[in-house]
Length: 371
Image 1 (cartoon, rainbow, N blue to C red):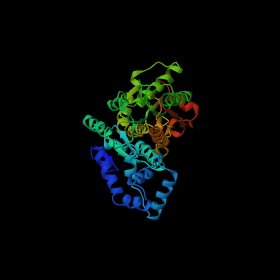
Image 2: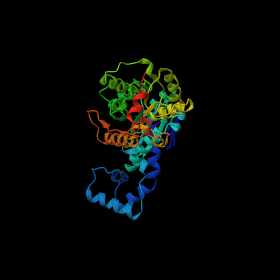
Image 3: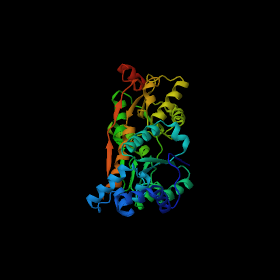
Image 4: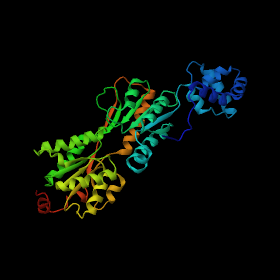
């Protein structure tokens, strides 16, 4: 499925450019050329800022354009220069997830803000089924867009592998393993998860569980590894019963929390705020008090995190900033290609609220960690 604020472009790049150029050039350029005493091709070169035009001639043509109030067709100019000023944004999931997970609207807002600042447009594709991925790869090679941003790519994503082999500039939001040719913007997922779990340990909790994200997504892998790093740092043996995987959704977090309860966790680190929201709902339904019975920590600091009951302690990541940095990086790559890949790691911080039990007296936390 694709959703776009641009009409679908025909498959033939040349015919699109010709039509747009004709719309801009019909009669008007001819009239400018007559008034300026130059050829139509000279007027076209002036419009497209061709440096191979005499300065005096350039000024004469521009004076005529101003006198006639001529406004060049921006789309035609872009296509004539080999650029459309359109960026593709690919999110590898279905429309249901996009509009129910608050993470993506924040990311898209950041991308859109940066594109607007640079006078670029954005075309959005959602790509869950494999046939849609094949369609997207065909569109990416058609000349409709200047570059691509891919958010939440999967491990060994065929779309990323196709982009690596192509000449189209692209940037990922999220780290991509096993490739030295990928530009990306990310946060410190693994160290941030480690620090969140260590904080729970420092508060006195011993049986710390995790609701881990999907392991075919790099963020899910990194945050689970951060959880394991924290246990190793504290000399705590890994208990597989305290690790349950879910799909980054509220429903997934709800089901995962119910699976963890028979194993008596005293604290739970969730790899996303959406899953933490589901965990809080499950605990409330079974009569468990947060944080007196079980502490909960999330990851994202989405807008609802401060309004949960109790307010959610979570790793705050700059989601909209990641989107704007990715767009700025891609636009820069389009204009100034670089041999070495560009990587930006944005900082995170732990937003401490009531769900982790930091405000509880130490003796209450200690009594809750027994077993």
